[in-house]
Image 1 (cartoon, helix red, strand yellow):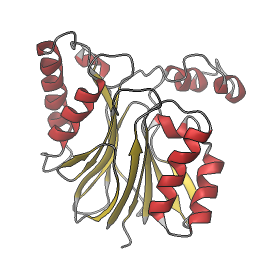
Image 2 (cartoon, rainbow, N blue to C red):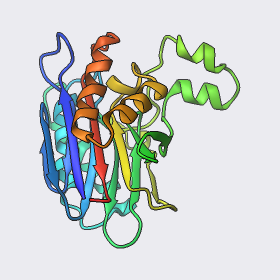
Image 3 (tube, rainbow, N blue to C red):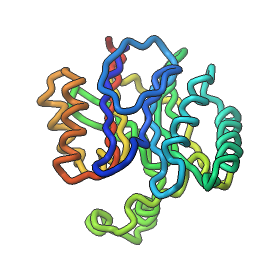
Image 4 (spheres, rainbow, N blue to C red):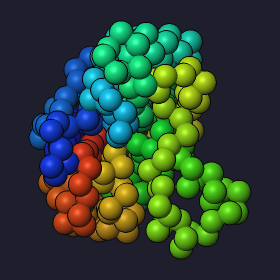
Length: 243
């Protein structure tokens, strides 16, 4: 399979807190495509406002990249290691990161997710079906009927997450691990710097226009988020399992 990725740091930010994990390698500030046999393809986002977000995302991806398979106990051990690492850093006790990705091994891929990074299946080369559910306050309010979709669009704390790795407490991690039930050929992974500013319709238009040029597509997604005034780090990754 082939991985296409593009990530840039946010405007006025000192460093990019997004990370891309491909097998055992961790990437930031990169535009690239590469062949991959198996293992993890994922995105992580250091939690904004928490000291050491970039370090948390880097640490998390390095540890996950060493796993032979996606098992809950292994992720819990990584979370505990991140908590210890955070306490050892100056002012870094609450360093945290979100994580969304796919593990390819035997059979259908396994989805691993926490936070507000996302994984979508790409259908017919241009339609998106979101496979993850945001662990955010606004999603909870939507699920419980306390907000309408229209109200959620302007909700002041849209990016307030309810689950992550680290964060100073082990109970903040509520991890989704599940084997996918259908075999999609392409997947899109994004951080919130992209999908909070580019609608699903716009993302699908970019995919349709790209006509299979996936590197051009991820670059356009990031560029479109900047056009829409995203000041956050922006990351988009397309994985083509049909190649």
